[in-house]
Image 1 (cartoon, rainbow, N blue to C red):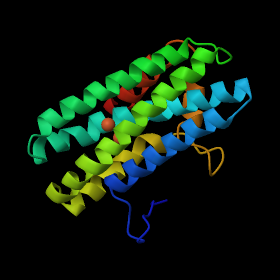
Image 2: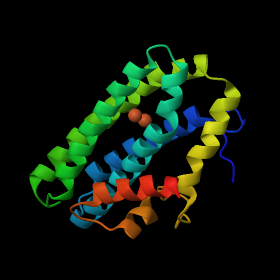
Image 3: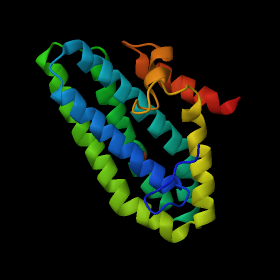
Length: 190
Ligand SMILES: [Fe+2]
Ligand SMILES: [Fe+2]
């Protein structure tokens, strides 16, 4: 099924990335609102899977186009990748932290802050530049490619995040971030 934006036209990659950002922030809010430890951990793992899928797809599909089409694109991409690495570090700290430990929520809040910064940065700086320098046709084409990796598992529930089943197939716990990355990277090359 083709995703559509508010104006009814087919969603391009900028629309999809923006929706992803919203979903991440919603998941982070859900973790903070939950008082059930198990649910907190489960939602955190779903958030981690969602962030990995988003970051890997950005690096594989979007950043090469930014480097090619946007003035100073290479510097922008470098900066973004550094921020992704910071996010990955916090997610790894979360993997081996007990969800009942107060430190867990501290790390969730740290992750939320980094994600919010990531989303603001891209939405206010990068996306307008993408719309300016990359043709609508190419943005729509990128959007189609973007959707492919997250189509893989059938959604268990209409409101469930794309990566919920995916994270369950990869498995939880320590090493999850790296396993997700390997799986996502490998998925594209075959
Ligand atoms: Fe990014
Ligand atoms: Fe992003």
